[in-house]
Amino acid sequence: MTEHNPTSPTLVLGGTGKTGRRVAQRLTGLDLPVRIGTRAGGVPFDWEDPQTWEPALDGMKAVYVSYYPDLAAPGAAAAIASFAELAVDRGAQRLVMLSGRGEMKARTCEKALTASGADATILRSSWFSQNFSESYLLAPVLDGRVFLPAGTTPEPFVDADDIADVAVAALTRPGHVGEVYELTGPRALTFAEAVAAVGDAAGREIDYVEVSAADYADALAAEQVPGDVIELLMYLFTIVLDGRNAAPSDGVHRALGRAPVDFTEFATHTAATGIWNVG
Image 1 (tube, rainbow, N blue to C red):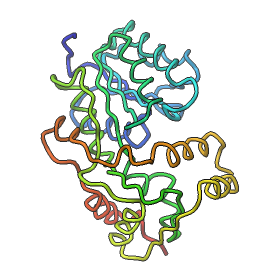
Image 2: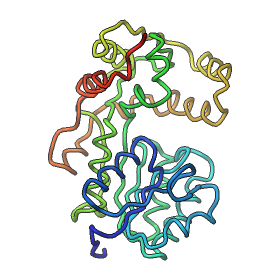
Image 3: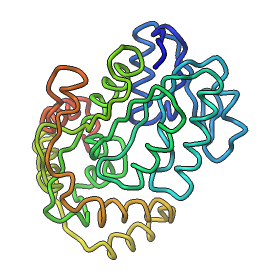
Image 4: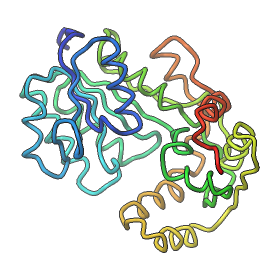
């Protein structure tokens, strides 16, 4: 393990995404130098174009690693192994990786990263609360009907702000190297319960409609959602969401010494921004 200078530059991959944007904002708020690596904006970085990796890593001492499109995608582990080796070779010793909770393909990617010999921290995250406000569930929420093949399996949704707080701690403070943090909210809710909580916070009726996985895939295809995105969602809903991750974990508390944000708190705060207002 090497000593890390928290004032050293940090490369934030996916720096315009849900977690990366928050990580970059926090580092900037601490007056720490940040480089945002993304396919659109910031410093050009593309996981599918290794020629963009070295320029993005130039001068960086730490990296927040968020893989696009998902760690379950074909070739993810090989790409992460190559990137991590290059990062260490270029002097970026501290790597903090966003991973998925209860996903065997994600575990393979974690091993690929840690095999580089980097001072690594792994953040295994449950489903993001912000999927209801910044992602594929926002439009259905605004329409007032959320169709999902989620069944009655509960999920301890995690707030992306908690993920960012843990990531920044791991990037800038001692005591996190070698840790694997399972990041969840404090309690598990079914998707139906989560939709109801969003409706309560927004002050309007939002229906949850259970559909089959096949019907959901067909509906996404009819909306011209890319095939790889459909495949990923089917993997998450039909394989990962099987109860293996239903129990909340203590990762946020272990990393930060405080409780994680509850889904109701997330919903109340988000509703106040007006993002779920209609008309």
